[in-house]
Image 1 (cartoon, rainbow, N blue to C red):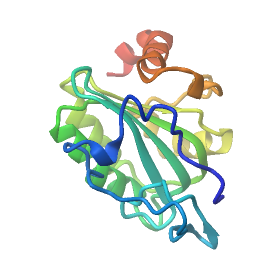
Image 2 (cartoon, rainbow, N blue to C red):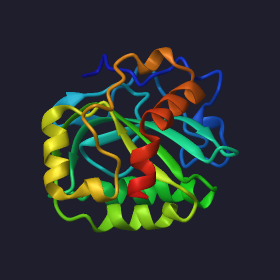
Image 3 (cartoon, helix red, strand yellow):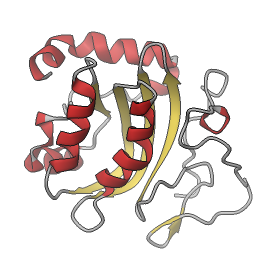
Length: 193
């Protein structure tokens, strides 16, 4: 797991640690010290902690004019034991929402498990952004993660779809990726939100 780095080719477009409006502004990374772990496995030091013991994130891109954010995640999403959605919402999403962000793309390639609880914080996040034509997409869900999320009822608040798979998402520009996702699912978004 220590070899899995967050996507870094968009650093010419955005760096969260250099964005004064980012919750990770001023963060300094030590490329040689591996201190964060998911269970017994060290992860790459570029991943940002946000309160969860098993889920880490990287804010890859934020566009304040377009009100969009792309966040890559790694680990186990566990709402049952540690309420990871609470940490994600309070320590990342709320900070970005206060800055006008209402459209979130969560890249889920490296989310290996999901353990659901209730949907309260998903509902709250949805309510925070719905007035601004907001959305929460989950891109590249693994099938077992998708099934667990769907069983928990998250598809009412979060755009879940197994066909929303873009394994080559890294080849897109940030705006290109957002455009591709929005073009792909515009009819469904209108129906959900």
